[in-house]
Length: 138
Image (cartoon, rainbow, N blue to C red; front, side):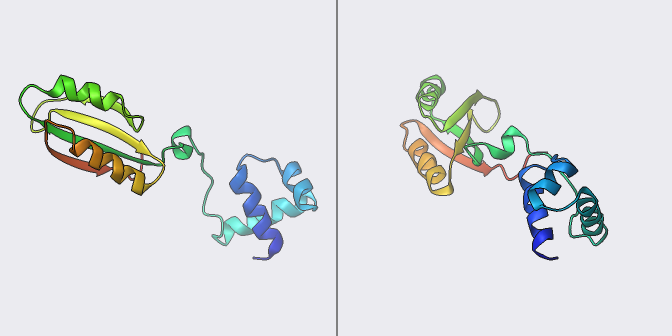
């Protein structure tokens, strides 16, 4: 791969739907050159495929998780109200079984995520919790 190949891949990372004409103009080469380079990069495996980024992929809250909460006595309603006031909490769900509530959490980074978890654990009436980070969505 040379500098032109690297620039071509960079342009495709920004806009995977860019036309050959746009790519050629940005690179200062002909459409035939772009087509030949794309074919060569795909055949050699340098480009393994093309994909789409969804809104969830570029969310301002890239660190997301689910926190399951066990609540003391009948305090679930009160704690749900407290949770809904926190900006990092995107949703609160009542559930059955081992856990009383599930809080969906979204933050910009892991230290902020950890801070939110600590704040929730300190709420009076929260007995126990278990948190799962959301690694990917299919």
